Length: 400
Image (cartoon, rainbow, N blue to C red; front, side, top):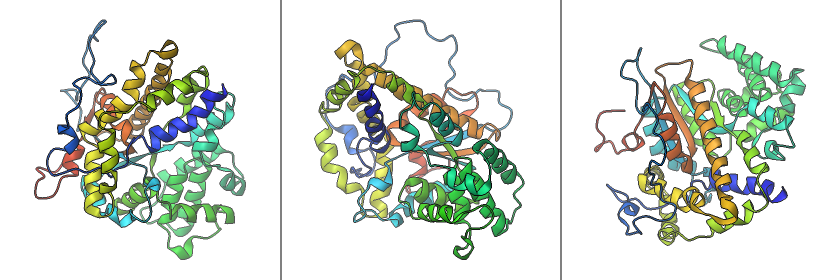
């Protein structure tokens, strides 16, 4: 199982980091994206073209139920490249200014990020044979907070929920420090970092359950170049939000743990197959960083139909079409679909107690097409057009 287990990390890196198979630095002229008009074979092997071969569902759940008590829950899925992978010389956090301005205009009540939640991380740790090394790769260790609090993780999670619910309109520094410690101990470090960011720097000290070790960790998170910090925390502070919803999932990795050793070489061969647009994508990548305008155009491209098709044709669709070794690549696709469904379910859960909320989901761009499809099946979720949100002020219509 070593080959399949090793593949999990490499694959998650490719599907999450680079899942945005190419960075957000591919050119997009005004209007339609350049890639949308490029001449490519009519039906590449991995093209997301489907036909009905069995029974159709009796009911079509797409859209919002026509009779709805109240307003729909509006979900904006923003596909992103993982920003900490962009070169510091070419990408500065202030290059996100235009993207942040438009997302703030959407005014989300809930921000969901691609981070694994505390309960899932607890499961990953308690079943190491099924998830070898997965928690180490995707979860923060809550021990620095739990040791200082004198709690276990479930107790910290319960206490964090109670403290968040009772949080006054103007929390004291002591209340924020305690909530930061509880969130970290609950396995929700980005919500802890959000509370920490709301403190004056002089108040970021080892008190109220925060240890010296935890101070160091929380301070370090404030300088992260990850989108969870540069986009989610920034927006949450601008909008007055008190926590972030974690929606990533790696419990699906059990599919890869159980996969045969043949999966690794076959997937490598899938990734080694050159897409007709690969050269153009590679040549274009440096043109979507370097300025706020370029980064905004990059986000428009990452969330375009042309890019979503390219990602699928270059990866998951091609794996689905590969017959080698008894179609073992479909086990990779199964992993991807299970993970995506659980992530989408986490988004629904995050909004479940706030019917009619506005939800911003920040996720690796290769998830975008799948999230839209999965969330569109819910009774009361209305998808928000990301291109309308990211549009220039002079070209946008009615605010989404």
